[in-house]
Length: 73
Image 1 (cartoon, rainbow, N blue to C red):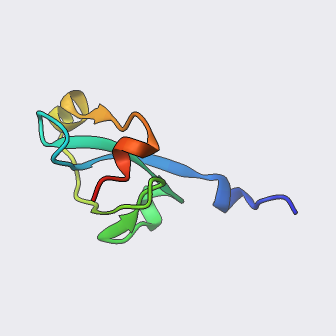
Image 2: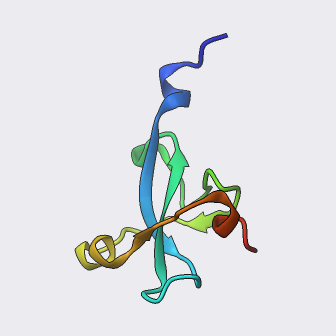
C-alpha cells in the first residue's frame, strides 16, 4: 500500500545533542515543522525538544550521520 504524501514528508532541525562540539546536531523528523509540537521523535528513534534555532545554529550544527550514532541514549 503506498504511503500518503503526509507520511513521506520530513524536515531537518538542529536539536541539542551532546555528541557535537557545538552542542547541536541536525536530525530528521517526520511530517512538517509547522505541524510539529514542542518535542518529537526523530527518525533515529530519540525524542528531542524542538526549539526555534538561530541562523548560527543552522550554520554550526552538523547533520546526524547514521542511525548508530543517533541511537545513543
